[in-house]
Amino acid sequence: NSKTLQLANNSFDVSFQEIMATLSTGGTLVLIEEYLRLDMVALINFIKNQEVNRLFLPFVALQALAEAALSTGEFPQTLKEIMTAGEQLKITPQISTFFTKLSDCILYNQYGPTECHVVTELKLDGDPANWPTLPSIGKPISNTSILILNQKQEILEIGEIGELYISGECLAEGYLNNKQ
Image (cartoon, rainbow, N blue to C red; front, side, top):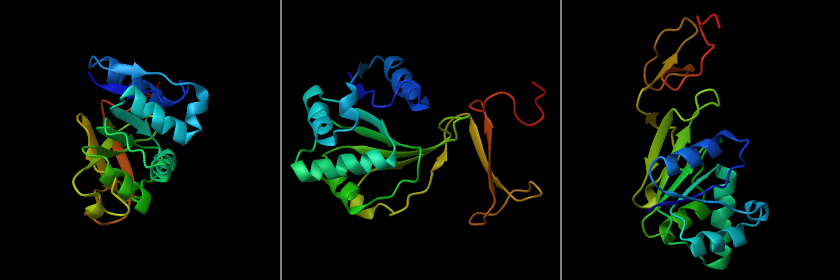
């Protein structure tokens, strides 16, 4: 009985995640009019009135939503999951307060380049006051491997700086050693 707001434009890869993650699990996809994507106060009220449970949005939109909630005092208690991706997540005072005021909402920080979509996820729950200011990108999702390699393509130790390598079922065709 979950309700997911389709906030992303249909031309953006996240719209596919919103649609498929909702419909493939028997949930309801809640469509919005274009003006709601830009009016965060109206969007907060819409989320509350439609009893939306799940949102997918980038950090900048999450920050704007948190600021709108704080300015109006409206905190949609039906929200249970918020996924953010597309840019680095920062736990600002507004976001921390927003999640403190929501009774039971989990924040997921997801990462993945367009070619792979989401490949890692970090679950942030519990007291938002204990969340790191700059959360990590988390751990690989199922059927995905993440490696940090040096210039010689050797695996680096934890904490060393290198290049992120992704493998698994999520990788698009046409990459290394693929002649297509």
